[in-house]
Image (cartoon, rainbow, N blue to C red):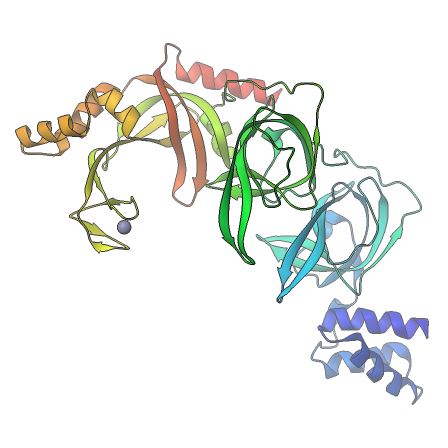
Length: 424
Ligand SMILES: [Zn+2]
Protein backbone atom coordinates (compact mmCIF):
# COMPACT_ATOMS: atom_id res chain seq x y z
CA UNK A 1 0.00 0.00 0.00
CA UNK A 2 2.98 2.31 0.64
CA UNK A 3 3.84 2.18 -3.08
CA UNK A 4 0.33 3.23 -4.03
CA UNK A 5 0.50 6.07 -1.57
CA UNK A 6 3.82 7.34 -2.93
CA UNK A 7 2.70 6.99 -6.50
CA UNK A 8 -0.55 8.81 -5.77
CA UNK A 9 1.36 11.66 -4.16
CA UNK A 10 3.75 11.94 -7.10
CA UNK A 11 0.91 11.90 -9.63
CA UNK A 12 -1.19 14.41 -7.68
CA UNK A 13 1.70 16.85 -7.61
CA UNK A 14 2.49 16.42 -11.30
CA UNK A 15 -1.14 16.62 -12.46
CA UNK A 16 -2.33 19.32 -10.10
CA UNK A 17 -5.22 17.27 -8.65
CA UNK A 18 -5.87 16.02 -5.13
CA UNK A 19 -4.08 12.95 -3.85
CA UNK A 20 -7.39 11.39 -2.74
CA UNK A 21 -8.78 11.58 -6.27
CA UNK A 22 -5.66 10.05 -7.82
CA UNK A 23 -5.44 7.36 -5.15
CA UNK A 24 -9.08 6.33 -5.66
CA UNK A 25 -8.42 6.00 -9.40
CA UNK A 26 -5.27 3.96 -8.82
CA UNK A 27 -6.94 1.63 -6.32
CA UNK A 28 -9.88 0.86 -8.55
CA UNK A 29 -7.47 -0.10 -11.34
CA UNK A 30 -5.37 -2.22 -9.00
CA UNK A 31 -8.50 -4.13 -8.01
CA UNK A 32 -8.49 -5.43 -11.59
CA UNK A 33 -4.89 -6.57 -11.13
CA UNK A 34 -3.49 -3.86 -13.40
CA UNK A 35 0.24 -3.43 -12.58
CA UNK A 36 0.99 -0.19 -10.68
CA UNK A 37 3.03 1.49 -13.47
CA UNK A 38 0.34 0.76 -16.02
CA UNK A 39 -2.35 2.04 -13.66
CA UNK A 40 -0.33 5.23 -13.15
CA UNK A 41 -0.14 5.75 -16.94
CA UNK A 42 -3.94 5.42 -17.19
CA UNK A 43 -4.46 7.94 -14.39
CA UNK A 44 -2.03 10.33 -16.11
CA UNK A 45 -3.93 10.05 -19.38
CA UNK A 46 -7.27 10.54 -17.60
CA UNK A 47 -6.06 13.82 -16.10
CA UNK A 48 -4.49 15.05 -19.31
CA UNK A 49 -0.92 14.47 -18.20
CA UNK A 50 -0.08 12.45 -21.34
CA UNK A 51 1.94 9.27 -21.28
CA UNK A 52 5.31 11.00 -21.15
CA UNK A 53 7.85 10.57 -18.42
CA UNK A 54 7.97 14.27 -17.54
CA UNK A 55 5.77 13.75 -14.51
CA UNK A 56 8.23 11.34 -12.91
CA UNK A 57 10.85 13.36 -11.07
CA UNK A 58 14.42 12.98 -12.31
CA UNK A 59 17.37 12.95 -9.93
CA UNK A 60 19.59 15.85 -10.98
CA UNK A 61 22.47 18.12 -10.05
CA UNK A 62 21.29 21.67 -9.41
CA UNK A 63 23.10 22.85 -12.56
CA UNK A 64 21.03 20.37 -14.58
CA UNK A 65 17.66 21.75 -13.49
CA UNK A 66 15.75 23.80 -16.03
CA UNK A 67 12.25 25.19 -16.14
CA UNK A 68 11.42 22.39 -18.61
CA UNK A 69 11.20 19.93 -15.68
CA UNK A 70 8.01 19.61 -13.64
CA UNK A 71 9.65 18.06 -10.61
CA UNK A 72 13.05 16.78 -9.51
CA UNK A 73 14.91 14.87 -6.79
CA UNK A 74 18.05 16.53 -5.42
CA UNK A 75 20.68 16.01 -2.73
CA UNK A 76 21.75 19.40 -1.39
CA UNK A 77 23.19 21.49 1.44
CA UNK A 78 20.88 24.13 2.96
CA UNK A 79 22.66 27.52 2.76
CA UNK A 80 19.99 29.86 4.12
CA UNK A 81 16.47 29.79 5.48
CA UNK A 82 14.16 32.74 6.09
CA UNK A 83 10.63 32.65 7.46
CA UNK A 84 7.82 34.89 6.27
CA UNK A 85 4.07 35.04 6.35
CA UNK A 86 2.42 35.74 3.04
CA UNK A 87 -1.20 35.99 2.06
CA UNK A 88 -2.00 33.16 -0.31
CA UNK A 89 -5.50 32.70 -1.70
CA UNK A 90 -6.94 34.81 1.11
CA UNK A 91 -5.12 33.07 3.95
CA UNK A 92 -1.95 33.80 5.90
CA UNK A 93 0.60 31.12 5.16
CA UNK A 94 3.99 30.84 6.87
CA UNK A 95 6.60 29.92 4.29
CA UNK A 96 10.32 29.25 4.45
CA UNK A 97 12.60 30.46 1.72
CA UNK A 98 16.29 30.47 1.00
CA UNK A 99 19.07 28.93 -1.03
CA UNK A 100 20.27 25.38 -1.52
CA UNK A 101 23.60 24.29 -3.00
CA UNK A 102 25.46 21.28 -4.29
CA UNK A 103 28.86 21.12 -5.95
CA UNK A 104 27.33 22.19 -9.28
CA UNK A 105 25.59 25.40 -8.16
CA UNK A 106 22.80 26.97 -6.14
CA UNK A 107 19.01 27.29 -6.40
CA UNK A 108 16.35 29.23 -4.48
CA UNK A 109 13.55 27.38 -2.75
CA UNK A 110 10.18 28.02 -1.16
CA UNK A 111 8.86 25.50 1.39
CA UNK A 112 5.11 25.69 2.04
CA UNK A 113 5.41 23.77 5.30
CA UNK A 114 8.09 23.28 7.96
CA UNK A 115 10.20 20.31 6.89
CA UNK A 116 12.44 20.81 9.91
CA UNK A 117 15.72 21.38 8.06
CA UNK A 118 18.13 24.21 8.90
CA UNK A 119 21.08 25.97 7.29
CA UNK A 120 24.03 23.58 7.23
CA UNK A 121 21.91 20.42 6.90
CA UNK A 122 22.61 18.01 4.05
CA UNK A 123 19.28 16.73 2.78
CA UNK A 124 17.67 14.60 0.11
CA UNK A 125 14.59 16.25 -1.39
CA UNK A 126 12.18 14.04 -3.30
CA UNK A 127 9.67 15.37 -5.79
CA UNK A 128 10.34 19.08 -5.49
CA UNK A 129 8.26 21.08 -7.95
CA UNK A 130 10.18 23.28 -10.40
CA UNK A 131 8.79 26.71 -11.10
CA UNK A 132 10.10 29.64 -13.04
CA UNK A 133 10.96 32.91 -11.35
CA UNK A 134 12.54 35.76 -13.27
CA UNK A 135 13.50 33.32 -16.01
CA UNK A 136 15.31 30.96 -13.65
CA UNK A 137 14.22 27.68 -12.04
CA UNK A 138 13.33 27.56 -8.35
CA UNK A 139 12.25 24.66 -6.18
CA UNK A 140 8.80 24.48 -4.64
CA UNK A 141 8.55 22.16 -1.64
CA UNK A 142 4.94 21.26 -1.01
CA UNK A 143 2.64 18.52 0.24
CA UNK A 144 3.96 15.89 -2.14
CA UNK A 145 7.62 16.68 -1.42
CA UNK A 146 9.67 14.46 0.86
CA UNK A 147 12.74 15.58 2.80
CA UNK A 148 15.23 13.32 4.59
CA UNK A 149 18.76 13.72 5.93
CA UNK A 150 21.50 12.75 3.48
CA UNK A 151 23.94 10.01 4.50
CA UNK A 152 26.95 12.18 3.72
CA UNK A 153 27.68 15.87 4.08
CA UNK A 154 27.23 17.67 0.78
CA UNK A 155 30.41 19.69 0.24
CA UNK A 156 29.82 23.20 -1.09
CA UNK A 157 31.95 26.31 -1.71
CA UNK A 158 29.29 28.80 -0.58
CA UNK A 159 29.06 30.30 2.90
CA UNK A 160 26.42 28.68 5.10
CA UNK A 161 24.05 30.45 7.48
CA UNK A 162 23.23 33.76 5.83
CA UNK A 163 25.65 36.16 7.64
CA UNK A 164 26.18 38.99 5.15
CA UNK A 165 27.87 42.33 4.60
CA UNK A 166 25.41 44.95 3.37
CA UNK A 167 27.35 45.43 0.12
CA UNK A 168 26.69 41.79 -0.84
CA UNK A 169 22.91 41.83 -0.39
CA UNK A 170 20.74 41.55 -3.49
CA UNK A 171 16.98 41.74 -4.05
CA UNK A 172 15.54 38.24 -3.62
CA UNK A 173 17.93 37.24 -0.81
CA UNK A 174 16.19 35.51 2.12
CA UNK A 175 17.14 34.52 5.63
CA UNK A 176 20.11 36.90 5.88
CA UNK A 177 21.73 38.13 9.11
CA UNK A 178 23.47 41.50 9.40
CA UNK A 179 25.44 43.38 12.06
CA UNK A 180 24.63 47.08 11.69
CA UNK A 181 24.42 50.59 13.14
CA UNK A 182 20.94 52.12 12.85
CA UNK A 183 21.63 55.56 11.37
CA UNK A 184 18.08 56.82 10.91
CA UNK A 185 14.72 55.47 11.96
CA UNK A 186 11.23 56.90 11.48
CA UNK A 187 7.89 55.53 12.42
CA UNK A 188 4.93 55.97 10.12
CA UNK A 189 1.42 54.70 9.63
CA UNK A 190 0.42 52.99 6.42
CA UNK A 191 -2.73 51.48 5.01
CA UNK A 192 -1.85 47.80 5.21
CA UNK A 193 -3.91 44.84 4.05
CA UNK A 194 -5.41 44.66 7.55
CA UNK A 195 -6.07 48.38 7.94
CA UNK A 196 -3.78 50.98 9.46
CA UNK A 197 -0.48 49.67 10.77
CA UNK A 198 2.68 51.29 12.05
CA UNK A 199 5.97 50.46 10.39
CA UNK A 200 9.53 51.66 10.84
CA UNK A 201 11.82 52.76 8.06
CA UNK A 202 15.25 54.29 7.94
CA UNK A 203 18.86 53.73 7.06
CA UNK A 204 21.32 51.18 8.43
CA UNK A 205 25.03 50.83 7.85
CA UNK A 206 28.03 48.59 8.33
CA UNK A 207 31.60 49.09 7.20
CA UNK A 208 30.76 48.09 3.63
CA UNK A 209 27.63 50.12 2.78
CA UNK A 210 24.49 51.99 3.85
CA UNK A 211 21.05 50.64 2.95
CA UNK A 212 17.44 51.66 3.52
CA UNK A 213 15.33 49.34 5.67
CA UNK A 214 11.68 48.71 6.49
CA UNK A 215 10.48 46.95 9.63
CA UNK A 216 6.95 45.66 8.99
CA UNK A 217 6.53 44.48 12.59
CA UNK A 218 8.27 47.20 14.64
CA UNK A 219 11.08 45.93 16.88
CA UNK A 220 11.61 48.22 19.92
CA UNK A 221 15.39 47.63 19.85
CA UNK A 222 15.72 49.48 16.54
CA UNK A 223 16.86 52.88 17.81
CA UNK A 224 18.79 55.56 16.00
CA UNK A 225 22.47 55.28 16.90
CA UNK A 226 22.07 51.73 18.19
CA UNK A 227 24.23 48.80 17.10
CA UNK A 228 22.56 45.46 16.61
CA UNK A 229 22.61 42.08 15.02
CA UNK A 230 19.46 41.46 12.99
CA UNK A 231 18.65 37.89 12.06
CA UNK A 232 16.36 36.64 9.31
CA UNK A 233 15.85 39.64 7.05
CA UNK A 234 14.81 39.51 3.41
CA UNK A 235 15.93 41.83 0.63
CA UNK A 236 13.67 43.66 -1.76
CA UNK A 237 14.28 46.19 -4.45
CA UNK A 238 13.47 49.76 -3.49
CA UNK A 239 13.89 52.37 -6.23
CA UNK A 240 16.34 50.15 -8.02
CA UNK A 241 18.58 49.38 -5.06
CA UNK A 242 18.43 46.69 -2.37
CA UNK A 243 16.51 47.38 0.85
CA UNK A 244 16.53 45.34 4.07
CA UNK A 245 13.14 44.09 5.31
CA UNK A 246 12.32 42.88 8.82
CA UNK A 247 9.25 40.76 9.58
CA UNK A 248 7.67 39.29 12.70
CA UNK A 249 10.23 36.46 12.36
CA UNK A 250 13.26 38.76 12.40
CA UNK A 251 15.12 39.11 15.68
CA UNK A 252 17.04 42.17 16.84
CA UNK A 253 19.81 41.74 19.37
CA UNK A 254 21.66 44.83 20.69
CA UNK A 255 25.44 44.57 20.31
CA UNK A 256 27.86 45.52 23.07
CA UNK A 257 30.63 46.32 20.57
CA UNK A 258 30.06 49.29 18.25
CA UNK A 259 29.74 48.44 14.56
CA UNK A 260 32.35 50.08 12.33
CA UNK A 261 30.63 52.40 9.93
CA UNK A 262 32.40 54.35 7.24
CA UNK A 263 31.17 57.82 6.51
CA UNK A 264 32.16 57.52 2.90
CA UNK A 265 30.24 55.65 0.28
CA UNK A 266 32.05 52.83 -1.50
CA UNK A 267 33.91 54.31 -4.46
CA UNK A 268 33.38 52.21 -7.54
CA UNK A 269 34.04 52.42 -11.23
CA UNK A 270 30.84 53.07 -13.18
CA UNK A 271 31.05 49.61 -14.75
CA UNK A 272 31.19 48.02 -11.31
CA UNK A 273 28.39 50.21 -9.95
CA UNK A 274 26.09 49.52 -12.90
CA UNK A 275 26.87 45.78 -12.78
CA UNK A 276 25.76 45.70 -9.15
CA UNK A 277 22.22 46.40 -10.35
CA UNK A 278 21.68 49.41 -8.06
CA UNK A 279 23.28 50.93 -4.94
CA UNK A 280 21.68 53.07 -2.26
CA UNK A 281 24.87 55.03 -1.66
CA UNK A 282 27.85 55.08 -4.00
CA UNK A 283 30.61 57.45 -5.06
CA UNK A 284 31.96 57.72 -8.58
CA UNK A 285 34.38 60.06 -10.32
CA UNK A 286 33.70 60.91 -13.95
CA UNK A 287 33.66 63.53 -16.65
CA UNK A 288 30.46 65.28 -17.66
CA UNK A 289 30.00 64.31 -21.30
CA UNK A 290 26.72 66.05 -21.90
CA UNK A 291 23.99 68.07 -20.18
CA UNK A 292 20.79 66.59 -21.54
CA UNK A 293 17.53 68.16 -22.69
CA UNK A 294 15.19 68.64 -19.77
CA UNK A 295 17.92 70.37 -17.74
CA UNK A 296 17.94 73.95 -16.44
CA UNK A 297 14.63 75.73 -15.99
CA UNK A 298 11.86 73.14 -16.02
CA UNK A 299 8.20 72.88 -15.00
CA UNK A 300 6.69 70.30 -12.67
CA UNK A 301 3.10 69.18 -12.14
CA UNK A 302 1.92 70.67 -8.82
CA UNK A 303 0.07 67.43 -7.99
CA UNK A 304 2.63 64.71 -8.72
CA UNK A 305 5.89 66.57 -9.17
CA UNK A 306 6.56 65.05 -12.59
CA UNK A 307 8.38 67.16 -15.14
CA UNK A 308 5.82 68.46 -17.64
CA UNK A 309 5.78 70.39 -20.89
CA UNK A 310 3.27 73.01 -22.04
CA UNK A 311 1.34 72.64 -18.77
CA UNK A 312 0.26 69.09 -19.67
CA UNK A 313 0.72 66.32 -17.09
CA UNK A 314 0.35 62.79 -18.38
CA UNK A 315 -1.70 61.89 -15.30
CA UNK A 316 -3.36 65.17 -14.33
CA UNK A 317 -3.98 66.76 -17.72
CA UNK A 318 -3.95 70.56 -17.96
CA UNK A 319 -2.21 71.96 -14.86
CA UNK A 320 -0.55 75.16 -13.76
CA UNK A 321 3.11 74.08 -13.86
CA UNK A 322 5.58 75.06 -11.14
CA UNK A 323 9.05 76.30 -12.09
CA UNK A 324 12.03 74.31 -10.85
CA UNK A 325 15.70 73.75 -11.58
CA UNK A 326 17.44 70.46 -12.24
CA UNK A 327 20.24 68.91 -14.23
CA UNK A 328 20.42 65.64 -16.12
CA UNK A 329 24.08 65.09 -16.89
CA UNK A 330 25.77 62.16 -18.59
CA UNK A 331 28.83 61.11 -16.59
CA UNK A 332 31.56 58.92 -18.04
CA UNK A 333 34.64 57.38 -16.41
CA UNK A 334 35.93 55.30 -19.29
CA UNK A 335 34.27 52.11 -18.04
CA UNK A 336 30.60 53.09 -18.43
CA UNK A 337 28.19 56.04 -18.35
CA UNK A 338 25.28 57.01 -16.08
CA UNK A 339 22.72 59.80 -16.09
CA UNK A 340 23.23 61.94 -12.99
CA UNK A 341 20.00 63.61 -11.81
CA UNK A 342 20.82 66.74 -9.84
CA UNK A 343 18.02 68.35 -7.80
CA UNK A 344 17.17 72.01 -7.33
CA UNK A 345 19.48 72.83 -4.40
CA UNK A 346 22.67 71.55 -6.01
CA UNK A 347 21.58 72.92 -9.38
CA UNK A 348 21.25 76.40 -7.82
CA UNK A 349 24.85 76.11 -6.59
CA UNK A 350 26.13 74.95 -9.96
CA UNK A 351 24.10 77.54 -11.89
CA UNK A 352 24.92 80.31 -9.43
CA UNK A 353 21.34 81.44 -8.96
CA UNK A 354 17.85 80.35 -7.95
CA UNK A 355 14.63 79.86 -9.88
CA UNK A 356 13.84 83.58 -10.06
CA UNK A 357 17.35 84.36 -11.35
CA UNK A 358 16.90 81.67 -13.96
CA UNK A 359 13.50 83.03 -14.99
CA UNK A 360 14.96 86.51 -15.33
CA UNK A 361 17.76 85.21 -17.53
CA UNK A 362 15.22 83.32 -19.64
CA UNK A 363 13.04 86.44 -20.02
CA UNK A 364 16.02 88.58 -21.02
CA UNK A 365 17.07 86.11 -23.66
CA UNK A 366 13.46 85.27 -24.54
CA UNK A 367 14.60 81.65 -24.38
CA UNK A 368 14.41 79.18 -21.47
CA UNK A 369 17.29 77.22 -22.92
CA UNK A 370 19.84 79.84 -21.85
CA UNK A 371 19.74 78.39 -18.35
CA UNK A 372 20.68 74.91 -19.54
CA UNK A 373 23.25 76.50 -21.83
CA UNK A 374 24.97 78.26 -18.90
CA UNK A 375 25.04 74.99 -16.94
CA UNK A 376 26.39 73.16 -19.98
CA UNK A 377 29.29 75.59 -20.30
CA UNK A 378 30.18 75.11 -16.64
CA UNK A 379 30.05 71.32 -16.51
CA UNK A 380 30.84 69.68 -19.83
CA UNK A 381 34.39 68.37 -20.07
CA UNK A 382 35.15 68.69 -16.36
CA UNK A 383 35.65 65.89 -13.82
CA UNK A 384 33.44 65.53 -10.73
CA UNK A 385 33.25 63.37 -7.64
CA UNK A 386 29.60 62.39 -7.44
CA UNK A 387 27.84 60.65 -4.55
CA UNK A 388 24.28 59.42 -4.58
CA UNK A 389 21.82 56.60 -5.02
CA UNK A 390 22.13 54.53 -8.19
CA UNK A 391 19.17 52.75 -9.74
CA UNK A 392 19.37 50.57 -12.81
CA UNK A 393 16.15 49.85 -14.68
CA UNK A 394 14.76 49.67 -18.19
CA UNK A 395 15.57 53.37 -18.65
CA UNK A 396 19.23 52.67 -17.91
CA UNK A 397 21.39 53.65 -14.94
CA UNK A 398 20.35 56.81 -13.07
CA UNK A 399 22.33 58.36 -10.24
CA UNK A 400 20.26 60.52 -7.88
CA UNK A 401 22.90 62.96 -6.75
CA UNK A 402 23.44 63.89 -3.07
CA UNK A 403 26.79 65.58 -3.46
CA UNK A 404 28.66 66.88 -6.48
CA UNK A 405 32.19 68.23 -6.20
CA UNK A 406 34.93 69.05 -8.63
CA UNK A 407 37.56 66.31 -8.76
CA UNK A 408 41.29 66.79 -9.19
CA UNK A 409 41.89 63.19 -10.11
CA UNK A 410 41.81 61.65 -13.56
CA UNK A 411 38.55 59.64 -13.69
CA UNK A 412 39.89 56.95 -16.03
CA UNK A 413 42.90 56.21 -13.80
CA UNK A 414 40.67 56.06 -10.70
CA UNK A 415 38.22 53.74 -12.42
CA UNK A 416 40.99 51.39 -13.46
CA UNK A 417 42.36 51.37 -9.90
CA UNK A 418 38.88 50.70 -8.45
CA UNK A 419 38.35 47.83 -10.90
CA UNK A 420 41.69 46.32 -9.90
CA UNK A 421 40.81 46.51 -6.20
CA UNK A 422 37.45 44.82 -6.60
CA UNK A 423 38.90 42.01 -8.69
CA UNK A 424 41.60 41.04 -6.21
ZN1 LIG B 1 0.67 65.29 -12.40
